[in-house]
Amino acid sequence: MQAGSIHLGPLSISWHGILIVLAIFVGIEIAKRLLRRWGHDPAGFEQAVFWAVVWGVIGARLLYVITSPQAFVANPMSILEVWRGGLSFHGGMIGGLLAFWYYHKRHGLPLYPYLEAALPGVALGIIGGRIGNFLSAWDSAGRLTTLPIGYTFPPGSGFPGICTSTLDLANRTCAGAVVMGPVHLTQIYGAAIGLVLLAVVWFWLRPGRPYGYAFWRFVLWYSLLRSVLEEPFRLNPLWLPVYQNNQLGIGLFTATQILSVLLIGLSLFMLWRLGQRPPEGLRPDPLSLKTHPR
Image (cartoon, rainbow, N blue to C red):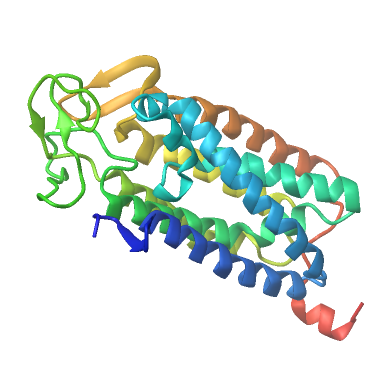
């Protein structure tokens, strides 16, 4: 069995894909419960979320290919093999958001209640995706580091190693020595970010908050935490190379960090806007819905 994957006949499926699918199903059930608690019919959500997942996967893969083209130079057709991993969270968020927005405009379904009901599932997806990345070893790999938190992958783990001449994964062209570490465990850093978001999202979803508050808080803090705690240590190309320390394993700025700065600014603006105008609707208290049913 290939490290980080299971085989179903001729098909090899990564743990990354398995855990993402599991997070989707669990997240949908959580979302339906939340929508009922808020007094919304979850039937429309079930219709919208199917296409949100489809376009989320398309967006996630597309942005990953754009930001990591070197991963597909040797085999461009592997772009279609999404089950092997290699998905961008921000691309998935944009694709899923567009699907929900379409259903909102086309069918009049609520936008922010649907987006916010999906947030716990999104956090689970971040956790599951990063754990799957760790099990596959190579996906979302970290930079070489001399820090004591560095980890050296054992033989047979599936990690191809780092080429010392290019400081890139050795499953691409390498003319120098190949080392297995120590590297930053950026997959674990990312999973920890997901755990933090899964814990605090329930605080943002408390009754009495305006719809939209939790969504933009989530976007803000995910973008901030990933830019600071994960992305500087990822083995990603530097689109704006302003700082690089190959001893500590730090690099600034990747495409994800640049996009995150834009999303942080947008999130702050939208949160300010929500606070400046009367909210279109507050998230209800479930007890009040039982007392005054719709």
